[in-house]
Length: 526
Ligand SMILES: NC(=O)c1ncn([C@@H]2O[C@H](COP(=O)(O)O)[C@@H](O)[C@H]2O)c1NC=O
Image (cartoon, rainbow, N blue to C red; front, side):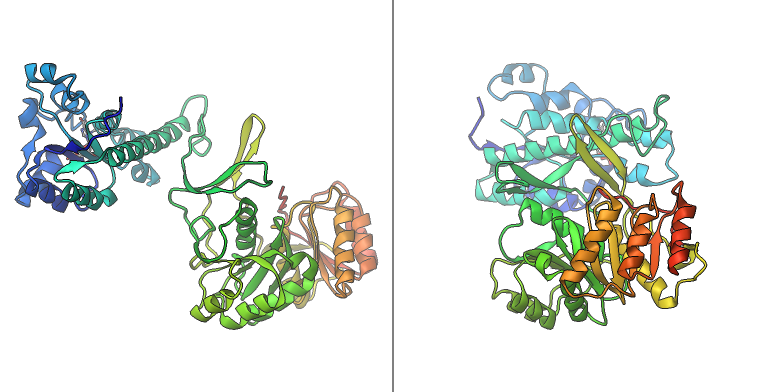
């Protein structure tokens, strides 16, 4: 039966690696009359700061030994934590075990240790905390009577509650702290299993451990998933390494939906690599308009003009602060689900407020630097794990394979189109001219149809394909794609190359006077 009553805090065990705030917290506990027990380093720090404290070894009668491998692993400690008040009182008294009412522990910094490329196995193993998680789990299990604090950010909350409740903690706080504690040790064990599981005789592959252990933290429950009959929630990494939708600040608007999150991610990822002011408009995970400009207003106008039909209800991402003029252009012109930018000018916030449902997000600055994290894709019964596609060719990496060299303008447009194609679902064909998309063909099962669709869309919006360049996310298996491009007026092509029939494709380009470059890198996206 859960003990829903408040429980008094009379004795604390404090053993922390990260000693941030511990002196103040320990002192505040003693000022409430709480008796402190503490391990070597923590004990010394508290004592140096004149906080009354007893060393665990004095209490147990056993010294810390084996270079700290055994400090708190003693029945007088674990009995004091695990003993059920009211049930185990007699046995505790018989063995001189005093109840410990609050455990304050954070663990050896295993993840930080192994993040150092010079860390060897012996160092990693010494940084696997044993006594700490044992106490954390014991206290969390016995949350009926004991509180467990694993994070310095909870010190003030605990002190406030003790002050408000005459030195007692409520059941809901103890339960919440206990769940946090199990989440903490679960994450800790994930890191250990991943590290060691990438170094076994049968799996010497540090980046792909024998079991895949990950921890994500819930950001929000969602009304539904991709469709209304699917349940959904959004989870984030504990420490995302770059600006992203998971940590973006929502300044206004309705709650983000499942599809909003997915599409906002697609838009933000696509806009990040551009150095010039850029705008990406995404619909159903594909960019339907992308442009760079002198400023983001010009970029937005050009991106919108690619495909105003699809931009309706789209997601718009920028790589510069959203200013008032651009905000006004958007809200005056179109229905938009989400706008995301590194920051939003106060006047722009006011302008978007006129459309109260529009979700407005500020994700923080990004400078083109991307973290090499993993991408996951669920399949029935399994999980595909791969590097994020951060590969990108530079101007000097591309190889001209045709008789005609691309002009400087064509080369700039080719690289622009190539950058966009990377974020278009395969088969991806992008027509571009002067730093803007002219037509996007996405997600077709044959490359030639993606090219046809890019052309149809451009024609529908009265955009002239003639004089544009074309990017293809993978090689052309036959010359038909080049023939179709020539007919549409494409003057230059960028593609990975590598087809059995590359020569046939090059010959076709030469026949049409098209300049073609190979990147040697493919960008499928499914
Ligand atoms: N071995 C033990 O019995 C043990 N008991 C507590 N610890 C850890 O020792 C650290 C604190 O040590 P110190 O107070 O000596 O700086 C904490 O991270 C705590 O989780 C232990 N260390 C590792 O297992």
